[in-house]
Length: 275
Image (cartoon, rainbow, N blue to C red; front, top):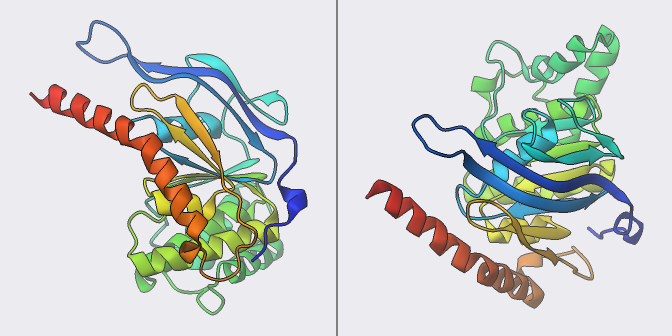
């Protein structure tokens, strides 16, 4: 699949300006700082991947963009408007599927549409469309326990897409899957991104996954999380086996070089807290 050039140079969709996030910890003398002075522009229609050592605040940053929590300082805007809470312009996919076990795949996808008051026929049409988009045509009436892990995650993605958000926020959605299923869903997700033109922010621990999916990779420091660097990923084409491309290995090595000291720092901090 080829990345359309007009999708790359678009104006800022999400602006993160001097964002810090602190938490009060019981028994501690001072607040815990998860994020410190984050500045980041996310372009409209781009696929941005976010990597960093464990505990660096990646998920906290995604929660802030989702409006699930508010920054302690700074501001996050979407299309120039400050984010003050959750909104239908943002869909979220977590690592855990969080499907209703008593609802079929169609019923799970329709859930958010019911809350919006969408008419029954339109709900069914949208559910069928998005389940087909994620490769689940023929499985609409299956319950979660009748689906594999990868299929359940596809339902979760279809549910987030069904109310047509501008932005899709994904927090390690493939981490619990086996390697073959994960690679298959990565390819499916790129196809969905190209078909829908969504802005996608994708958190991952995997450098290979970050390079394969992202147009840009934002690398975070160890705690407190800051943006250490942003790596532009530019392949001439995404046709064929991208991982066999020599530039893939170069990008991977560069990002690991940026992360190596941060991972070591996070491990030292974890060891000192246990000691």
